[in-house]
Image (cartoon, rainbow, N blue to C red; front, top):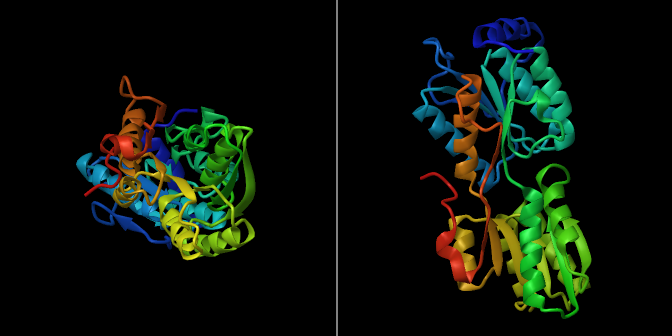
Length: 320
């Protein structure tokens, strides 16, 4: 079923009576009254408050301003229930489309159904659904491939020797499951996973996990950590335990992460620019709404495995 912007807003208006008007972390790049001049109005529902999510938010807001779009924002704080509530709140604002960085792919079915019932399309960031027919589009990071790239670095570095690997995952669901799944599936037979615990994308939690991990596995060779913020905390825990030789691979490609790879603090990271994800999400959402030629429904964000040898090739991670 196709909707024009006007008909989408008419359907969404009927939803207001059942939706809450209090947004979690709500903001707008062009004032708080919506688009009265006919320009596009977007709702961005972010998933958490990590550095990645902050950079993604900044990119969405900046690109929205460049495209003369009104952007309302909300943060789900890693809670699927809050995510659905935020989507309901955005529907009550009669947005033309929703951009969603989900906290859990299992939550998307309900999110998409709720938005469709109001005639509002959803554009996804980072992860795609198995069935994209009910989704406007996606700025997709192949998170399985991210894990595979880090595993490939370990395979090359281990050079056939039997090695022990620890995993500090993120929060269960969505990004972390895909990252860890891709990593584990791509590890060579000589690399044995001896520990796998969630760090919840929280550096303090990740440090606790790492302290316990290195105590239980003092001969650990490598660690895969689901983002750079946690990787720094893991490095701190390992170093304090006298395990400076444990090599850490991770993902993001932030300025601090690249500096750590250059210095040897981290052995490798997979750069996937939050800035590019946010820019692509806004531009493609608007382009798909307007049925512009050449706009991809599924846009894959470039990935770069970064080591000491190619730090200069990493894309800019966060908007200035």
